[in-house]
Length: 210
Picture (cartoon, rainbow, N blue to C red):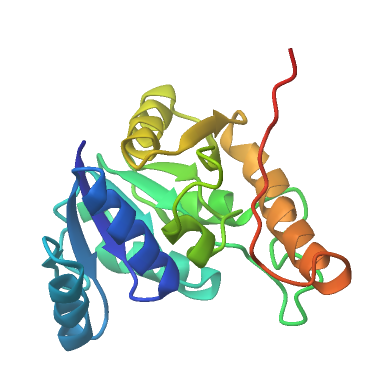
């Protein structure tokens, strides 16, 4: 259990905040619309509303914003993020949703890390989960798998503990460069929605065979 600041007011922010609170974490909601942030914090019950651009109170800061604005949000908070674990949940998709809008050989998480201050540790996580799946109870008692990637072992350990507090299973995929593979997995999910599964009521996970 820890202190979590969630920057964003969308469906993923709501789903993560709800599960974080249920897991016994302190949750701060931060958004550009102060009234909406306050309203959301009140509706969740137990969360507090922070101020956009001010220092987040959480030891872990979740970027629950579109990728196009993520680097700018990190820049606005500046040195206030130093010493924090920053979780990037974004999928940096092209407008037609058929590719990744990142430089070759890089990932959205790595580009966000470039904008972060020294001492901030970026970890990729949650980008392969649809918000309503994240908010729902486990299917047949099986916890959701949350794939993570990051360069700092201690930061990944803190994110893993946060994931476990919410009743999910962290799956470490390696260094932050693996975020590109995770973002491609998000793209894969959209391909499944468009061509085979035809809905978003599913998640990717690992089945370990004996």
